[in-house]
Image (cartoon, rainbow, N blue to C red; front, side, top):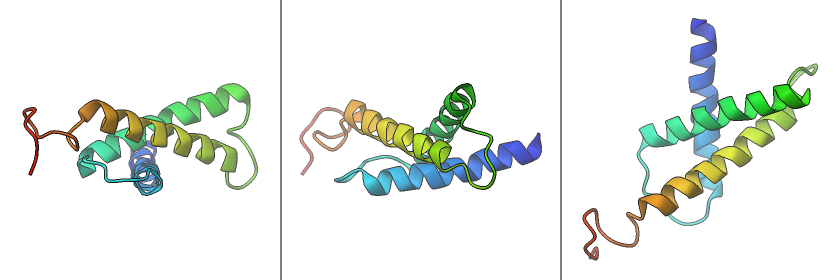
Amino acid sequence: MIGAIISAIIIGAIIGALARLLVPGRQHMSIGLTLVVGIVAALIGTLIAQAAGLADTRGIDWIEHLLQLVLAIAGVLLVTRLGGAGRSGRFGRKST
């Protein structure tokens, strides 16, 4: 159980960081939020891969990890678009 939690945090951190690197432009997200997006994407990607029968392969599950990365990219885009901190300041004023 502890190993699964640590594994989810590590994979989530890697997936979240890769997603932020692949999304063009600047994202105004904290490291904690990046970690949360990565962990959620990793968990949902694993569930989808298991449901499709793609999670249990010999060696590295490339399709599962690619699915997790795509979900993390979508999550980063969603958070940055909904946050809107880059267009106006924290309280709706134009940033200078």
